[in-house]
Length: 365
Ligand SMILES: NC(=O)c1ccc[n+]([C@@H]2O[C@H](COP(=O)([O-])OP(=O)(O)OC[C@H]3O[C@@H](n4cnc5c(N)ncnc54)[C@H](O)[C@@H]3O)[C@@H](O)[C@H]2O)c1
Image (tube, rainbow, N blue to C red; front, top):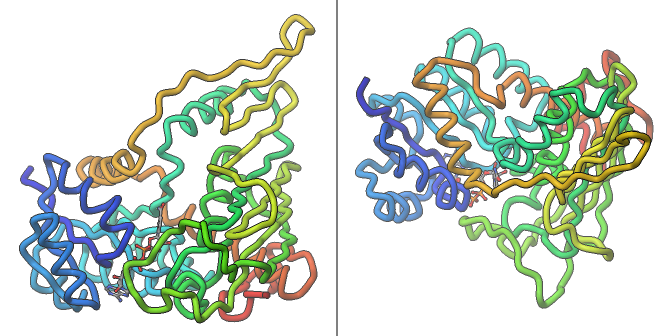
């Protein structure tokens, strides 16, 4: 088998730090092209990573290049259309999180992926962390017994990203869509991806437009909205989700909060036989009627590299990736159920018409 010809769509920050360097370092991949609406940004990154072909139109690129796969690294609201275009050209797809920002789109993307028999993955980066993989082993081995509660939070003191992220027409939502998607996905995946029964949520436009001097933040490569002039999304979100089997998930997310800073994403899982925390990774149980706390010894890994290499391996072996479109679609449904609940002030029950929330009608602020 020759090298896989891969293109990166969207020559922005995540393409530069995660996708391009790790495709470049993979011995079985040829970085064939970069596409971005902004020709200068595309050219600049293509030069940096030794990519010959540069396009400003994705359709033209897909027609001109014999590609095996693409990474889609563009703002959230563009994901659905770009995935559709890529699948129509018969290539495998890795799309950045979230899969998309609308429940109907999510369903159609799952169907399109299945119809085309393509390898389709959502970039749920945290699933590839070695500490996450370690705690997942305890949960999957049954060491926690019956699980009944999981909580996930990522509370940034001052970490509103600069750029399109605060513009709902481009992001589909605020901190919930941006970093809440990581926390929710990780907690849900760790506990075995149960079916959602209901969601209650609150989204708050609080202090995210701060003028604090110190804060560092994720920066879009696109100068548009760099000063967050358009800011029509939440900067704090909390939710309470009930799942089949009785498990409950509690979520807290902020871009800005007057409280302690979570340096990283925190997930705690509680079961009848044991409990486990992600940060720090500790297993809690009772042994000989004595409470014990066991610290897990885990070496950190290059999780972006592991994510990209996993996608490549799935293409080569034609096997389902760790984060499928189907799972990505369920996470989008959960995010939008939370937004719908926040907008209406009521619990959203799945299976009811209200559960068909979309980003167009569900983004309470
Ligand atoms: N997995 C992670 O840990 C992680 C971290 C940060 C961002 N992300 C995700 O990555 C995606 C991109 O984020 P970013 O911070 O790199 O954004 P960015 O603004 O830095 O880059 C996006 C690029 O996409 C280009 N673009 C927009 N529409 C396009 C189109 N239709 N065709 C081609 N190019 C187009 C823009 O010109 C821009 O250069 C988002 O979905 C974000 O949620 C993931």
